[in-house]
Length: 411
Image (cartoon, rainbow, N blue to C red; front, side, top):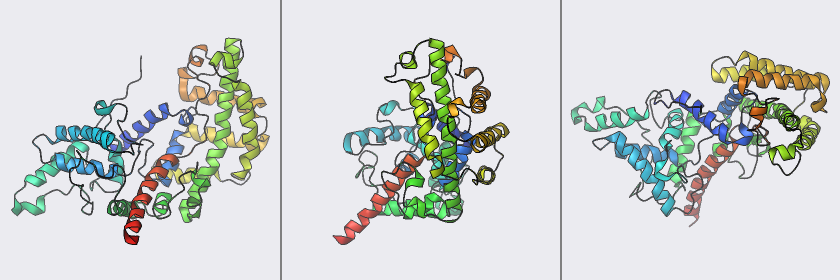
């Protein structure tokens, strides 16, 4: 029976988590096969508050409020908001040369999860929606109620949206001048929202120190590395945890390749349809990882417990005990046995096998012929990047919008 997730217009935090889970199923290198998602998400939230892997472009932070304000003047504001969001997809697709990150580019007006559903948590986190408990349904209805209120009851009108938010361009959403390109005023406004609502974070630092368009990880970005204080400490922990865990991810895939070969009784490349032998590939990748590991951290001195403390503070709740035990044991193996030739290390192999069974129960793949049939040759094999690709794009949109102000001034 296929998995189903019910969508509720309730807690934005729960919706954010569900969307992250769904996105992880579609991103090969991000799948949480070993059950470390709580810690990964806490680090991501600490570095880049309010973000999710589903965000695409910064101007949606204005598109959504503009649509809801327009819809609130109609008799059925919820239906109108839905219609206008779908109209936005068509207008962008037809008129903008830059459609990278367009939500609904493939599905068109049949898109199920509209931009408002994806961006609502971010809008609340940065007080574009002023009240954190306001749902999408609340927003159009409350705004209409305030719009319809008599003038002598002005003080009772609910204020839903940021009072400093720039207004929409003429013709919106049927016409969208500039497409995803922000105006200088829009970019400055969003930058200031981030600076005001997430001070001291890496995201706030990047809002005024834009990252490179090509850096693969935050800790490889020159602008990000200039951050100081608690944000720098968390960034260093993020790099260390990504590096340490990557070995576990590679060993997990090595064990899958080995199991697939054993179950199929033929070379793994034939069992998976791959051009090369995944057993050899993951052995080679483990060798490279082992050689490079201590360029990312000092195994002997890295303070995992400090990271756990910080993560639980960010979450405002404890991390799962079994997950913490797994990470501690993995780090102990690396410290006591070394990181070389882990594919031959019985202790490491047992830990990964048991962790998959604990995390996935009957869906575990190692030595499970039926489940191995669904393995494509890579499952969660990429190093953690903590939403860096998403953040880099959002920051580039803000930077490019602000740069237009400089161009106008020079002209």
